[in-house]
Image (cartoon, rainbow, N blue to C red; front, side, top):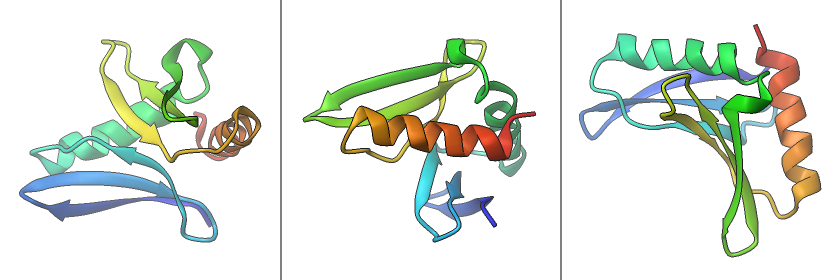
Length: 101
């Protein structure tokens, strides 16, 4: 089952969302407080289903990825890199199917 995990490294809390095979689908920015990290997970769940909160990008040499953006415009999480737009869309559908509130 896919789920969010929180880890602590370099004095910051991070969350990741892994698929059923353990591959990271989303990764957060670093948070100073664990509760803020948990709030970030909630923000992803609230916003992942809204097209206006998804930024699709291909700046990284043909690798596509998407960002989940909070209502304040800040990036909350970034997806893994995908080789094509089709793969990105499949990844986004996967995350939305599981975690849209």
